[in-house]
Image (tube, rainbow, N blue to C red):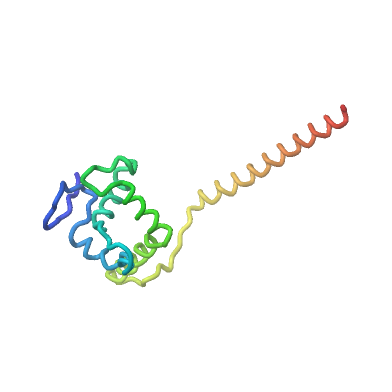
Length: 151
């Protein structure tokens, strides 16, 4: 069952991945402000986020964004720029901090978990890969020395 967010005045079809008004109010202050110079920002950042979340939720290609969302080059430009500048990590960390505070927990987690089965598999694979590479290098070395003896 899909969850349609509550939006006061939708100007287009509502997608299940869209931000609700409450979610937007929480995210808006965390987004970068306009630079203050150059051409003014003409794109609606809420719609940019809606488009990014649409791609993330549906798994579609950027070029396959619905026509009622901002153009895919614009959306992808913001996505890349925010990733490069660490905005996504900052959003994540800030939201996690506030959520943990609301739940009455410490701001930072004091527990870390590792799946021992994954660690063993990775360790074993690393060792077997190293041995395989060493065998191949030895075989190449043997072939090379054989060629030199034959000539």
